[in-house]
Image (cartoon, rainbow, N blue to C red):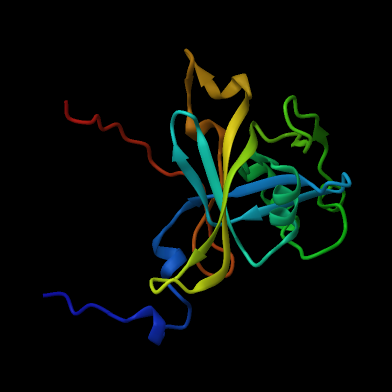
Length: 201
């Protein structure tokens, strides 16, 4: 039998670093562009991000603490997700700084105009989703106590894909060289070996 390292999270993990986000990994980066009601730009990466529905397409990210992105989406109902790739990893990392500066300028990133929402897209990112917020949910623990984290869900209303990522009309995930978040202070990954497996009928 395996002698598991077992623990109740509320009582501590007894390890040098909390393994939770290293186990639920690798995760896509939620590189979110937003704008305040006054038109101030913001760009920030979120490590808790994923897709939640197919039709309509809904994506979401979790903001730990009431940060600028959360305030902007609350005020305007809009945001843009940008695919973070290996080529833009350093720029993405630079946008994680806690600053009042414009993160596009701070990271030396050019912008592209969006077509259906106000926040700009990251130029050089090969895929962008323009989104309109559908729900903002404050998370709670199992006894209903509110915690300092908000789940922001948005419907994708416009998709932009670099044609170089399409082969016979099929999106090839590996061609984009997306970066994925692991655990620890700075663990990131690129997709590894690909294999095919079909669902049973």
